[in-house]
Amino acid sequence: MNAIKIDTTISEAVARAIPALRPLLGKRVELIALAAAPPQERVLTVDEFLAARIELPAGSSPITLEDMERAIAEGALGR
Image (cartoon, rainbow, N blue to C red):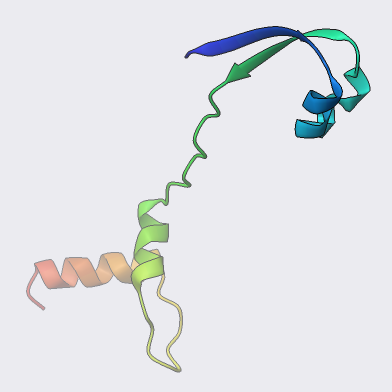
């Protein structure tokens, strides 16, 4: 990871550009800038992925994992 280190005195211009530094106005500081990590994407479990893809017909009850496993087994057996 690359970092940029700056030794400076907080001026009015810097305080206007970065308001969080206003309390340090006139003080000598060391600023270190690091690249922000990209936001982590939430990873779905297999069950969540499958459940999100299913569009149930109106009036049908929710499908359980056991229901899905039974349907897969029946399909594998050719029923």
